[in-house]
Length: 173
Image 1 (cartoon, rainbow, N blue to C red):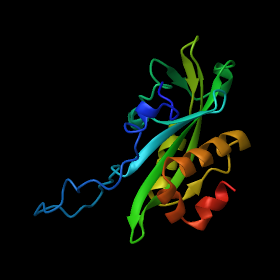
Image 2 (spheres, rainbow, N blue to C red; image 1 turned 180 degrees about the vertical axis):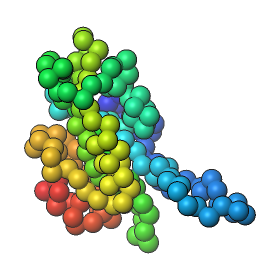
Image 3 (tube, rainbow, N blue to C red; image 1 turned 60 degrees about the vertical axis):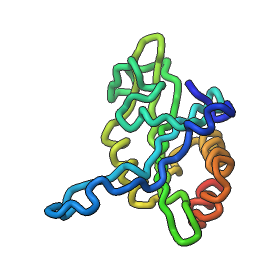
């Protein structure tokens, strides 16, 4: 797993910011029903290892944490699970520059030895949606994980943080 602390990884661990619209200029396309995830990046928060990193594999449930794990919906089936948070971060651009538009966290537990994990897929999808809509959903996170996430977002790019809403900043105060 890559850590944000590794200098070599900083370039590859960048947030996606507003790529070209793949359907821009298509004559018969009205855009109905299309959702673009191009400006969303998933972060993994590991409170046990005090680590936060960008892992684009999480977009398809293939992050380093999720690989080779069978997920169940009953927490009791993963008694030795290690807690993680997948945080869906949406970046938008306004006149002042790019900013964190939405941040929403989803919980999961993984037991590597048993190759079992606990997560509620519907919660992950709903949190992705909330992030896309510019909502900040981190109140269910434990204080330590929330501090790790807030520090990461501040340190990752000061401009993103400074341009973000007061609501987002207050969520990590």
